[in-house]
Each structure stands twice: as structure tokens, then as C-alpha cells.
Amino acid sequence: MKSNYIIGTAGHIDHGKTTLIKALTGKETDKLKEEKERGISINLGFTYMDLKSGDRAGIIDVPGHENFIKNMMAGVVGIDIILLVVAADDGVMPQTIEHAQILHYMGVDNAIIVITKKNLVDEDDLELVKEDIKISFEDTLLEDAPIIAVDSVSGENIDKLKDLIEEKIYASEKKEDDKSMRMNIDRSFTLKGIGSIITGTLTEGEIYKDREYMVYPKEAIVKVRSIENHDKPIDIAHKGQRIALNLTNISSNEIQRGDIIAEKNSLIKVKNVQTLLNLSKFEDVELRHWSRVRFFHGTKEILARAVPLDRKEIKSRDTALCEFRLEEEIYVKRGDKFVIRSYSPLMTIGGGEIIDTNEENHTINSTSYVSYLKNKENYSEIDEILDYLQEFRNFDQIFSHMGIEDKNLREYLEKIEENNEIDKIGDMYISRRSLNSWADDLENFLKTYHENHPLEEGIPREELRQKVKINLDSKNFEIMLKNKVITKKIMLQKGLVKNKSFAISLDQDQKKIDEIMKKIKDNEPKILKEADIIDKKEDRDILSYLCKKDLSKIYDFYLRKEYLDKLIEMAKTFMEKNGKMQVSEFRDLSELSRKQAVAVLEYMDKKNISKRIDDYRVLI
Image 1 (cartoon, rainbow, N blue to C red):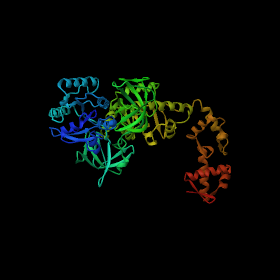
Image 2: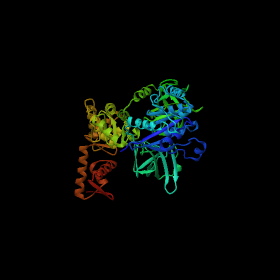
Image 3: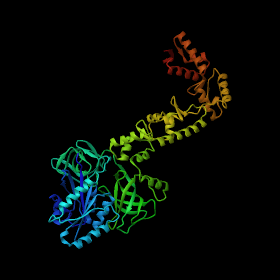
């Protein structure tokens, strides 16, 4: 499969970007009537360039005028190599600097600086422009970029530029990407007879014809009816390709620039993001708590408040941790790049990377969380998964958090499960460290329970699940209790959970047990209620314990199992002899009160020993 590359242009207004592209490709990117009339690019222009190798590289001509900076940022997303254009007769201008900053913050490090209109200056002035460029872009990702001067009208050095573009493309490795599919939408319109069309650069993963995806923020499920790349239909689009998609199940007026099409449930909806922010060296700027900024992510602009986390003020050239409280929700992935501009006057002042999506509000006083963020800066994918699995999560939750391809995520999970770093509990995952912590917590909870209920074999499983407030359903909780990490300390037996080391001890309670049993036996044939048997609530545990061994409880009455068997045998013998039996007859026979006699007979009915017919009982 041939690689897919996107070449972008950037630079100050009227520095010759569109003319340069025409010289490279023979095609114009200014297609709007207004663009033709005004001589500037208002929207993004798209074309392509065929390389000598036979590969085709898409070209995006982004607008240079300051008023169209948002469109410029939309064009930068997904670019592999940038042509930063500087006119020889003007040199480095304010928008040149701003575009260079945006490229730097968006991580575009493969660049060529093209000096256009070289025919308008002499060699000495040309050298001065080159020196100006080197000084301006020192300490940025563009500082080592090659510089070439061309004349787009006469074609001077255009072939050399083509060779340099191809050399740079193939010298830089196409970065492998395991992210799930995502495309930031920069255009949406309707074609008569075809339907809704969206365009953008596929920045991550692959997209397939006839598959379903999700459009954010609407969270609408759409189907891709067709895909086009440079006016040619394709079945699969790959990262780096400039594409148009024909969608079903949605109208174009429901989609706008800044929306995203991606795998279903693969993005995180947030209003707070924690970032590693780098402030511009080109502007004298300072961010304090609650500074208002314009936050650019993908192709979307959102107003936000800055909250420095590791210092009181973030100053020019600083790299710092900063939380942004967004004024509306956005959909992101961990590791996403962003740019910020000042609220007023408008100028690019910084950018960086999203390192967490914690919805809680943090400040400089959140010291433990700030420490956690500093460690998180260098997390690998596996580190991030293990961190996220401090709590029980299912696959869909992990997929949404990680934003990587389904198959790659499964490979990561299998690998760390084989290394005994995570455990699968039913359809949930958790880190081994957290599972060990749960084992300790359950052991401590049960220790307290056993101290308070020394004559109980254990706590019912479902009662335990609810009391410890674990985010597992009943089925998965039972599976967890059978996990080897848990069973080192805890035992599940007949629906009851107890510590392995626990055993009922009767030494201190034997005297009370003997007293209770004697009282119950001495009162026969009368049978007793709880209030007749014990004086203190603490003795209920003893009564409960005896019900599992020597006593039976029928409604509110307690009687020895041996005596209950005797009463049942008495009733059976009477019914075998007489065919049937009334309550009054059993009352007289057993010497019980009528209420007690009814209780015993209804117990026999429930046990399918007898059944009631009118006012009589007969044997089954």
C-alpha cells in the first residue's frame, strides 16, 4: 500500500502560497468567487501533487490573513510536511510568526521554509531574509528546516523544491499510529441527488465504505455510503488522506466545522482538560488563575478559563501544567494537541498537549493530583491502561478512554494480562495492584463484621457487595470472589462470604446457648417468641446461630428441630388414621395455642407435607 501524505502551506497574507502551489501542481486552490476577486484564500484550498515515485500527496493551501486564522488551524490538523512561505520582499511578518507557532504547538516538525518572489530582491537582501528566518525560528520545531528560494512565476528552483519535498517525505518515517479512526470536519454541504457530504483530513486510523461511525457532538450514528480521495472513489481511506465522505442518516445542516467523525464511543466528552502548556516566546504574555483564553482543538474554537497548577503565573517561554475550564463540552483523546489564543486582542500565545481529562476542578493547591500529572506526562499506552484500571472498567470504557484501535487495545490487554498486571473479572478489567487492594479492603471489612457477628458463618454475598459499594454487578462480584487473588484471604461458601481465617468460637457463648435451649425445652408444648427467649439484643446472634443448627423459626416462633419433627409426625399420624384434620383437632392434640397450631400446619403446607382444603388439612 502506498503511503498517504499531506503537504500544507502556511505563511503571511500575499506571500505567494497559492501561486507556489499552482507552480508545483499546475492547479489552483482558490475556488471561491470571493477568493478570486479579493486575491486571498478565505477557506481551505485542496489539490494534490504527484511524486516521481508514483505516490500522490495531497496539498492544503491554508489562508494567511489574520482574520482567517481558524481556517488555517483547521488545515494544519493531519499535515505531514509543511511549506512555510516567506516573501523575499517582505521577510518574516506577524502572521508568519503566528503560523510557525501553531505548527510548533501542533507538533509539525517536518518542514521546508520556502522564500518566494526571489526575483524581487538581490542576493544580499535574500541572505538577510534567510538570517531573519533563522533567528525568528530558533528554539522551535522549525529551526533546522531547510530554506530554499524560488520564483513561482518563472519557475526558478521549482524543480529543486519538488525534489526537496520528495526527499523530505521519504527521509522522515511515516509515524505508526494505533489510534482509532478520527477525522475533524472542516466542510459540510449537500450535493443534489447524492446527499450529505463532509470533508477533512483523516488524522487517525482508517475509514471504510459501508461502515457505521459516529458524528460528534451530536453523537449521531451515520453510515459512510462512499469515499472520495482527489475525485477518485475508494473503499478504504488511510491516515493522512484528504477525503470527502457521503453520509446517510444525517443532513449536512446538522454538521458544522469543528464537528468530528470517529469510531463509535471512541472519544471522551469533557469540559475540563489538564494539559502540558508551553507559552509563546514571541509574545510578552502571562497566564494567571482564571485568565480567559480561546482554546483551539482540532477544528473547533472554545472559550476557556486557565488555571495554572504547578505555579501561580505562567509566563512567556514557560512550560507548565495548566487546567482549562471550557465553556462548552468538547470531545477529545488523551495526547491531543491544542493551541490557545488570547481573548483580546487576538494573538496566538501558546499550545501543548492534553494529558488528562479529569472532570473535577483542580488548583495549585491540589498538590497530590499535580504530582500525579507530572508522572503521567511520560506514560506509555500500557502505563495509561494500568492507571485507568485502578477501578473496574469494561472494554467499551477502556476503548473510549484510550482512543486506540480495537485490535490494538485487545493486544495490549492480552499482553498485560499475561504479565499478571491486570485481571479480567467477567466482562470487567482491573489492575492486579487494585485487585490486591480490594482483597485487603474486603478482608478488613469482614474482620469487623466477624467481630460484630461472631456466631454468623459469614455475610450474604449480595449484602457484602452493596455495603462495600463496588462497581460490579452481582454476577461479576461473584466471579471476583472466586479470583485467586481474593481467595488467598476470603472464602465464598453457600452464598456467604467470610475471611479464610475465621471460625465460629462458642467458648464465651456456650453458657448462654445452654440457657436458651433449656428455656425453649422447658416451655414445651408451648412454643416461644424472641421476646420470651432473650433479654438483650446482643443475644440475637446466638438465636440466629442456633437456627442454623438446633432450632427452627416458624413466623415469630422458635422451637427445637427435634420437637418440630415430633409435632409433624403427630399430625401425619392423625391424618393417616382419619383422612383429614381440622386446626382445632391439631390444637387439642398438640396442646399448642390455636395461633401456634396454625403456624405449624402452614409450615407443613409450605414443605408439601400437607395441603389445605376448605377447613381441613390432608396429606399430600
